[in-house]
Amino acid sequence: MPALESDSLSSLRKLRDDFGHYAARCLKIRGKDGAITDFSLNEAQIYLHQRLEAQKERTGKVRALVLKGRQQGISTYIGGRFYHRSTFRKGLRVFILTHEQDATNNLFGMVDRYHQHNPIAPSTSAANAKELFFDILESGYAVGTAGAKAVGRSQTVQLFHGSEVAFWPNAPTHFAGVVQAIPDLPGTEIILESTANGVGGEFHERWQQAEAGVGDYEAIFIPWFWSPEYARPVPDGFMLDEEESEYQAAHGLSLGQMVWRRNKVAELKDPLLFRQEYPATASEAFQMTGHDSFIKPEAVLRARKANIEGIGPLVIGADPARFGDDRFSLAWRKGRKVIKRESKSKIDIVAGANWIKQIIDADKPDRVFIDVGGLGAGVYDILNNWGEPYSSVCVAINFASEPQEPYEILADGTKRPGPRNRRAEMWQRSKLWLDEPGGADVPDDDGLQADACGPAYHYDANQRLLLEAKEHMRARGLRSPDDWDAVALTFAEPVMERKRRTAPRVTSWMS
Image 1 (cartoon, one colour):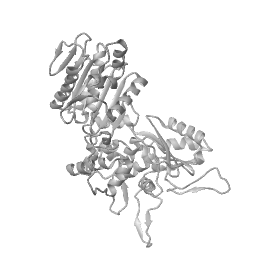
Image 2 (tube, one colour; image 1 turned 120 degrees about the horizontal axis):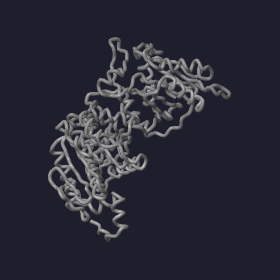
Image 3 (cartoon, one colour; image 1 turned 120 degrees about the vertical axis):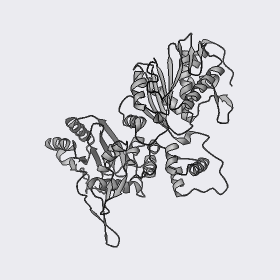
Image 4 (spheres, one colour; image 1 turned 30 degrees about the vertical axis):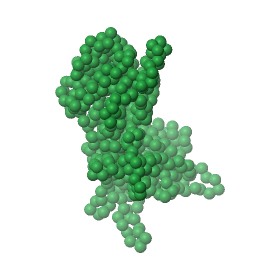
């Protein structure tokens, strides 16, 4: 351990104000090899620390949902963070709630290890298997297990750590009790972390809300490959197959990391289970085994990492909200590039029409395609009644209507059934666009990928492509894919630039 600085005021202030500095000098952890060692923050822990500190600086408090793979040191970091705060500040009570008793014991044992090895540890009046109380500071730790319905309700807590929240029994009850009982005051912190446990459930629902920007919680994702131990020596003759090569390129991984991944996939005997247990993106974490998404994650990942100039007409897709939890989503596309996407929740028809009007006035798009199912019909009618330029720029599209091209003409001249409806047709065009050799560019956004890869698909009795309905997705615990619906709408039909030079420029669905 580095030599501890002299007990000067400046040294103590640095220990108080700089957690990374404090952890390396005052905290001990047990490594995966069983040895006791200094706590030096790894890449994942540093990233999480920066995100939490930025939120605290911005809002005065911390409200975070942390999605991660297995054994990445996130609980270790949160435990150290809260121990640090409660030993330097008066009156801070920490409560840890885990999914099972063994986990409760392990997390409290970790905090007790911090305390036992801390050279500047405060005095305690209670130290047992359930509680650590710093008497002079009137601060301390308590732990509980999420089995009992009323656990933690009587606690007065300023710092709360919910561990493996996706696996809590009685999760809605705990959220309504202990989590909601924490005062909404500056300096309070609620950090809820978990690996994924499929779709649906309290954690997944709250993650989707946070990802969509709804509420106070910030969605923070930690990919598996930030853990340095998830790599192995590269054996002689090791070669990647096509899928592995695409995966490596998408995430910028080393061959050593790919060796580790291949072995772990073989151990789990299910590539989709690997994606859930060791996700590279947030959308992977919630994929269900056996779920066959229409748009594959690899295609979206390539587009997220691309840097392509947007050339051609500016086209906007608008997917107005249909139900209370749906979002009013817009997507801007120029040729091979989705420039941006935006969404708003709980806005009415008039507000939605005014939003699009402002965008038309500012961005001067060549077309705005609006889904007129549900509330969209009212939005379109208002814009159309306002006259030029809105009436000529806005085009009504009905997801449920017949496709423009009900049959695909093959090279030999024979016909093959096409999509069943307009929505499936536009999604198919967006999928082909992603897969084009020239590449595509979309915002590097987990929420957008979750929407793109959310819907499953099947073929009806006439072999026509049919995309999974939003209602069915909700029944599976998935949110409506509003953001990619907006992207798909930009492929409704070819668009000609409104500003003509010597000759009009026309874009295809692909360009």
